[in-house]
Image (cartoon, rainbow, N blue to C red):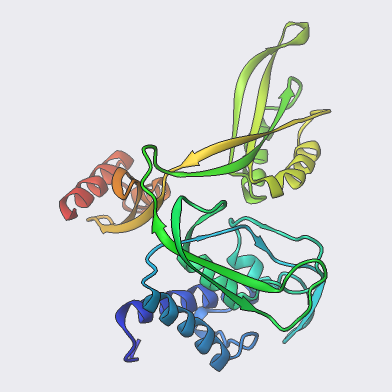
Length: 312
């Protein structure tokens, strides 16, 4: 923060180090101010993170998108001994992001790389519509069996579309249930979301033998379908599931924070071709403040929206 770097470089680098520190803090269960970057090395981390931010700044990159990440496999020697790949901090940083392993027995995403991606990328999946103007490659020294050891960056201008948003492929897993204790549904929903499900919902249906039943639907990234199918078999009474592939379009989204008389509330924004389309207060933030201040929840929501509109 006291450096003479450009403001954008300093702010981005600070955000990445904050993310990396928070991940290490969770992994080691110690306070953030007690973290020592023993795995990445203080000097190496500064060069990698600040150097990347300087490059992004000089190239004029404002928005980042990333493909699903191949994290590798096997084990790697770290400060605390031999640990499975991905490293604990890497796994924490990439939680909620699309990852996979194609069987290469090496660490392919480091904590530093994961921190950069997790901090700067707001879209994961296929390349968004863009006119590519430059392509660059960075090569590693290790020989990987069956694939080149390179990372690629493509730079360009976004292409305006009549219908905005990003297309991505998802898996839809369904199961019909007519004999399960209703109390289990909420428990399963929490476990499925924690396991990477994008959404979980139920629909009342009429089943064979004239029985009322429930259609359980789980939306997930394709790489998570197998694990979530296993979870469905383990936690519900179904004897079978159906899996289909679907395409969904999602609007680019971001968060801003507003100050209310009750406390700070994050506002979730979506955009169409760069223009703000929707603004909605984060429910969990509003609920927490309503409980803490003992005020009606709708009052917190209304004030958060009003403060956001006033600040536009």
